[in-house]
Structure formats: structure tokens, C-alpha cells
Length: 277
Image 1: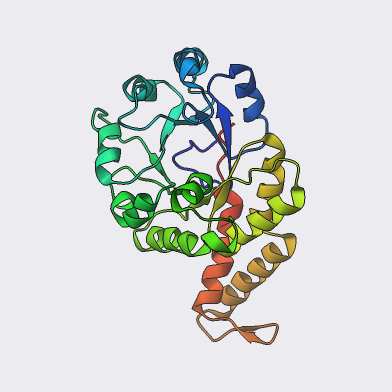
Image 2 (image 1 turned 30 degrees about the horizontal axis):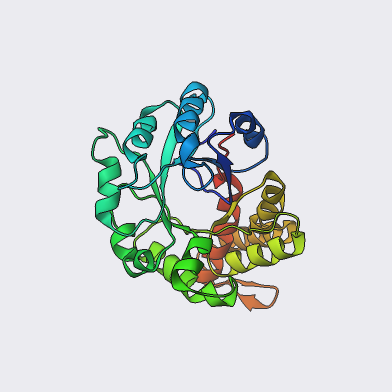
């Protein structure tokens, strides 16, 4: 089993930190990573209770990510202490806007803890290169709902695509894994979830945040290569291997380097998806 910081995620499922009865259920959902949430999903009066529940449950047997409250909040210092617990394999930092904010989180750790910054404000997008290039950052997450509010944007489809492109571009240039797109807030609308997930994939994202276990399967299905894609990729690589450096054509089309790279990516994705359960 890959640890969460080694894995490639397609589905990342949020679980409220004050609902410990849901932790084990989340691990069985099929999500590639579980994010136990101490921020938006937990009321201020329940923060301490949530930290106690997480500390009692945490174990190296089931690695998870932890979304903490940000620097400057009353809960930040105690949240950060939980990052030393066994099984906490990465930290999700909300409203990440600068390298300094990330350094505040990681400064007391003798070993690297993977950081997953949530880009969910105008300042976060503006400073995304600074954030993404900070030591410890493993992958960017797009907090679409908060970003819409901050930018006064109506609509979460094409209206957000230019900002999605920014995250994908910066991630690629700086050598990070492709980013993870934001949630679909409507739980029971499978058509909308599928459409938005397809859009995420087409825009170059590696996966999508989920807020309910029933969203996990459809998200995984969209990002999982189809049987036809896998068969095509295998045929491409077999043809290239047999050609031993000679020019290759498959199905009447030239197989050049970009085609080979695409085939390799498809097959690699079959073995690189993590399982935080």
C-alpha cells in the first residue's frame, strides 16, 4: 500500500473531524485519500472535541490527510500539534496565499511533511507560483466554493476554467503532481458530478475533492482509464518495442514521441493511484 504522500489521488474525501463514527466508514468508501477536516466542517465550539477524537483514532495503519485551521486562527497551534500523530501523512492548508504561511506550518518538523495548499482566494491565485514552489508542497487543491465567494463569481463551470488552467500550468512548470479540483456541492446529482469531473480531467486535473462517499465511485470512474484506452496504450508500446527505433504507424497514424508518452501515462496511472484506506 502506498502512503498518502507517495500516491496519486483521483478522489479525496472530506470527513468532519468531530464525527469519528464516520472515519472508518470513509476508509471503506474507495476514496484514494481521506481528509479529516478540522476547518469548515467543524463548528468553533467543537474544535477541541474533534482534536481529541482524531488523537484517539489516529494510527499508522490508516494514513490520512488533515485539514487544519489556518495560521492566525485561535485553533491553529493545537491543530498543528496533531500533525505528529501516527498516520497523519500530510496537511491540507486552507486559504494558502504565501510561502510564509506554509513555513509557519512546517517550521517545527524535523522531517518533511507533505503540504497540500488549498487555493481558494484571489490572493492565493495571484501568488500561486510562490505557494507552489515552497518546500514541502506536494500538490495544489482548488477550493472552488470559497474562491467564488472571494471573487464574487456567479457560476462554477466555465467561469472558473481560466483559474483552473493557472493551477495546472504552475503545477506542470514547477514539477508538482497535477492539481485536484474542487467539490461538487450537490450530493444527489450524478449527472452534474460526472460533467464537472469530466471537465476537471479535460482541464488537466488529477482528481477531485468529494464531500460524500457516494461521490467517490463516479469520480474514480471518470479518471480511471477505460478498457479501450488501456488496450490502445498497450498496442502503442508493443508496436514501438517491436520497431526497435524505426518509424511506427498504428491504425494509419504516425506514432511519435507525444503519442508514446500518452500511452505510458495511461498505463502508469493503473499502478500509481494511492489507497489511503
